[in-house]
Length: 112
Length: 114
Image (cartoon, rainbow over all chains, first blue to last red; front, side):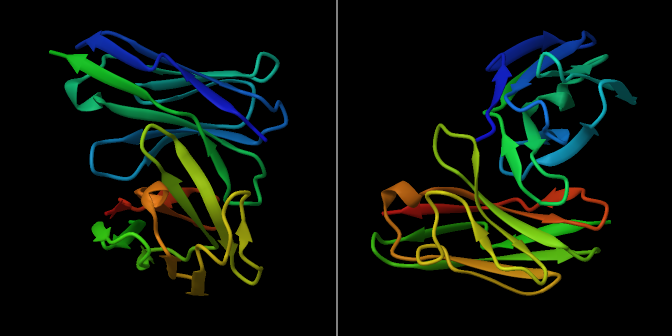
């Protein structure tokens, strides 16, 4: 069974600084890795996904994937108070299925 | 845009009773629907995955007898929690996937069991 671990459990970052979140997974054959943002009282919302080794950038978000070390990280540049939320890392075991394995989440707080 | 609605948003039921929750995909055709549960202090666990034209597949620790699911068309799914007890409380999420494999989640149904 695939395992997904996130760190840190919670993170406080000053407004305008870089937020860095980490995720490790147990199966190098995992297909896609997704990052979701969840605000209180709402369902998770997809932010960015990555499939290939290397990095991917979308706006203020950059994600790095290293399959050899089973590690993926999410970096939020110029963090804003509206970025405060729980961030979930999710791994898709099989691209043809809708099954995602979620990490336990990182609670990010951006301080003005 | 693609949206997923879930109903009800919150529900309370007495121990030993059952409750039904619904999931509606709007703005896209859902090729698969996954039901997850987030129990207190835990992350999201997959309950079952329902794909069009395939049998519903339940994960270990979850059964059709306890969580029967209906997926009659590409935009609607419902799940019932039968004989609910304290350990069934939590946030139940519906995730619907479109043809580009992106998964959209609803806001969840929060179940409290008394």
